[in-house]
Image (cartoon, rainbow, N blue to C red):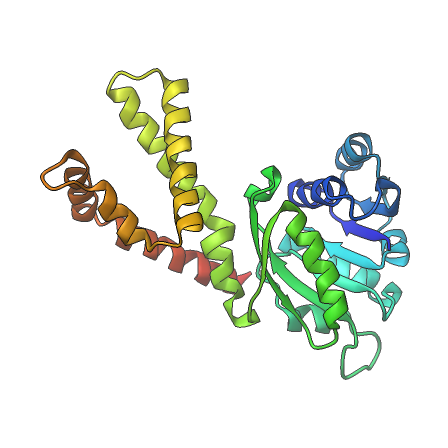
Length: 270
């Protein structure tokens, strides 16, 4: 099996790193292309993969092909490679906002009314860079169960991967794709508050980040509802419930929900 990447940016690098860490295939069986020479050189140097300046070469040599480009560059890529895609190749797209139907239409050749191409649409997130990603996965009807299992094995090499209905992919993009930025803002704000209380900034970032990490593990490993875990921290007449009251008065929940809604609507416009 040979795996190819069109685009060698951060997410592609996270996926390649996971593949090599889990020894799914050796580096010599990974090939990638990127429009930027620096990205090609860095990928070849860091991972010992084959990096080329030809998207067509990557397509021709790949059994599983990742689209890892920005949405605005995808139409050009599809037009360039569509005549070279083999019917047995499984295409895995991590391009935000681009539906399976869009990809099928973009890869049609000539007057073909239908697309036989095998497509798996997915949405990973930046925690994949440290092996803690969460990826939503949606295949089209042409992908077999065995092929989907291969893709899931790759995507699970840098975190968790779950099959979801494609109609949920915009929500996946909000709850896992964009939300790390919101969490980073929360960590930064908590650290600022600690600094205001006299804590050195470097230490404040570490305390805030570890609190978020530990809290997330409690949700995942105990299976308890987040509200129940919140109640466990809030002692009657204590300090924490005073802070919760301030956050409720400031509309924290509503602001986060509004931000998620804004992300979903923007994704639909891509």
